Length: 239
Ligand SMILES: NC(=O)c1ccc[n+]([C@@H]2O[C@H](COP(=O)([O-])OP(=O)(O)OC[C@H]3O[C@@H](n4cnc5c(N)ncnc54)[C@H](OP(=O)(O)O)[C@@H]3O)[C@@H](O)[C@H]2O)c1
Image (cartoon, rainbow, N blue to C red; front, side, top):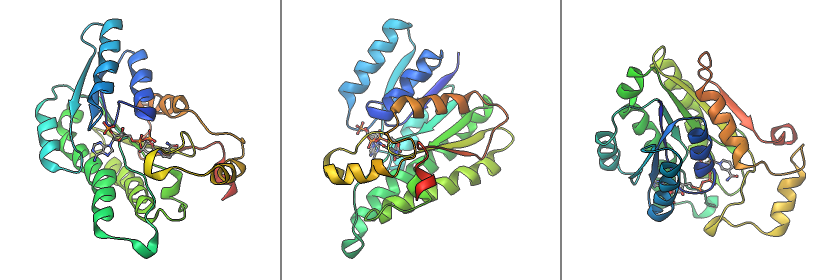
């Protein structure tokens, strides 16, 4: 039985990645930061379907101490999915160090140190790392400079670690286009949504399952490393 750790696994895309991997017979370590109730409910659901197939682990991923503690509580690991991230606008004229630290530490430092810290466990299983990137790590989204930079960096981290960790650990990425509208601070107006949809060649948003199925594909593709697959409905064709 293989074990996968999915960061930010309680909601939205992360939750669907957990569901898809669990259906494919992986045991799950569901990481959460604030969403304990949702993470526990998901683990309970999985454990009802298959006994002892899911646990939850809390960590603030911008905190190295939390990453070290998370390491201590994991035995076997086959797949690490770096999914957790923060996304909100940082207009260039009011850019500040607080937002820089929050976004870069969560979206880059956390995945980097999680990957290096867990690399000994992943090596033992000839495992893999899958980073959830963003097409805006390649072509910038206006008003989101720090987020764009963090995702460009995790794209390079994917290739760098693929080289460093070969031949023992494969490292790949999935780069979503528009999948689920952002919530809270990053909400978009009707016109902003329409303008985004107009640029997608397939004329619609993707689904969390589109991302999760690609994660599963990469987890099972033993001869692919250092690649980032865009799952964006052709959005990159129109930028
Ligand atoms: N949604 C899209 O259409 C889209 C498009 C392009 C790329 N992506 C990428 O796909 C991935 C998933 O997207 P999403 O929209 O589903 O994500 P999301 O809902 O914005 O965030 C996922 C989870 O990240 C966790 N998180 C945030 N800050 C954290 C921190 N400091 N430490 C630990 N965990 C933290 C949160 O966990 P808790 O709730 O437990 O606090 C949150 O539930 C992200 O990497 C995102 O950049 C998404």
